Amino acid sequence: MSKFLILPVGAVAAFLLWFWIGGGFDQLALWAAGEQRAFQNQIAGALRGLRAGHDGALWLLMGLCFAYGFFHAVGPGHGKVLIGGYGLGRRVPWLRLSVISLLASLGQAVTAVMIVYAGVFLFNMTRERLIGVTEDVMAPVSYGAIALVGLWLVWRGMRRLMRQRDTHAHDHGTCESCGHKHGPDLDEIDQVSTPREALALIASIAIRPCTGALFVLLITWQMGIAGAGIAGAFAMALGTATVTITVGLAATGMRGGIVGSATAFQQAARVLPLVELMAGLVVAVLAGGLMMRAL
Image (cartoon, rainbow, N blue to C red; front, side, top):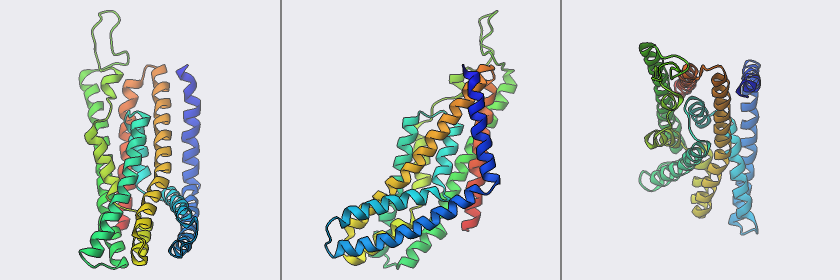
């Protein structure tokens, strides 16, 4: 049955390659940026309505912030790159990866609140300076941390490939004639991630907050409705989480298809390290490019 997974997995990979070569991701980014600007203008209107005491203004603000967070995550960003690459490169239960994605997005909201109120009360910083700190300092640090996670995946994949070569592991894992193991089985090759890895993923994403959240927090503080701004920042985080969770689920599903296809031909022990290595390279290259652009 696993052999039938080859066709859908190959079709998805071919579509993603075609979409990338054809500039589809660039068009998607432009569309997402336009939607963000439109929702930012509507958020400003909702804030004026909230300050004036209009009925339903708070719920309207929450909905607009959620939508802004969604379109922000659809555009170019680092969170979905890391979650997708990690889900493809490592065997992580889909529920655990979804929780990591959610906590990372909520962590961005926490960081935004801390930056704004520390900057306002402790350092008397303006909006421009706060955004400057986020883009000029925290963004490169976040991209660098994500690139390190990617390099770590590359190192793990290379180490496993070297271990297979050194031990002369073969595809069957256990020799039917002698009953002894000559190589690692799938459980040993593809161990579940540790809490330390999960914390590293969450921290590398959460360290760089959304600029839209900074905007809402600053405006609401100036308008005297700070509580609404904090709620709006977390609504944006939930909108962002819907995208990163979806990307993570897609990555784990694609990984399952690759593993299932490889298992059908008794090649899983060799394929899994290569998948981890390639996923790490993608994460490291994309995050490194974003870091160089931010510097």
